[in-house]
Length: 291
Image 1 (cartoon, rainbow, N blue to C red):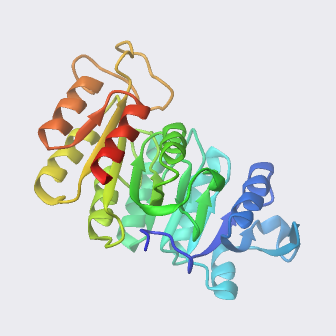
Image 2 (cartoon, rainbow, N blue to C red):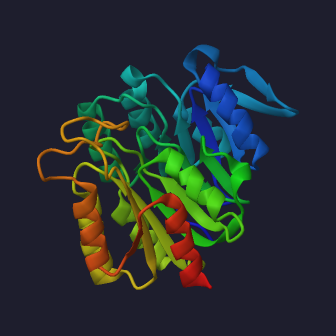
């Protein structure tokens, strides 16, 4: 089983005909994802060849959904156009929209997230690698060949750390790995994923990766202490980050005593989460619990 994305998911790609859209559509298809169409109003009616697979291009999300039954969109459009793209996907009735784009204005994210919530559409991202249910489907830019299917659920702010933990635990494998993104405002949170993994009968353990900035990890710790019965292993990036300097992600910044890695680690440990000091130690903790 998996969360949010499985072998039955039908994926369209908004921005498929751009350079990044083309590259990652090819990778998604190679990993077994059922990519049923792209969306580009200027190239509607054309078809694109990907290593023997022909993918049609539609003029709108609504048309793509009507013709293919798509229920997932992956968004590869420049930042100024992301809000319109997500709004179109929400209005088209899609259940899941994965926004890969970095640099989306926060006020745009706030607006399209509110619209999505009101319509019952789940948004993952922006500024994220997407999600993968190994052996079933891959929506985004996560390399599909670094891990296997298994019974670990992974939720992470960091794309790079998502890949590292997937690789280090590749022999155990994952039900689903979700990169939620590191912007100050995102569509799907740690808590959303923790809830879904807790309810997934084929996920036995959850790995949660956080980083400096904000209070998402502290809120997740509170949720874990109250409502998660499965073992959770955590890692928080940024113990040596200087105060006041953004580190990689737009939301990764320590302001005074707020948002520090140490505070997040302490909150998670108080909730019963085992927290690694490095990604490799985090993997060793997982192995110890699953041994």
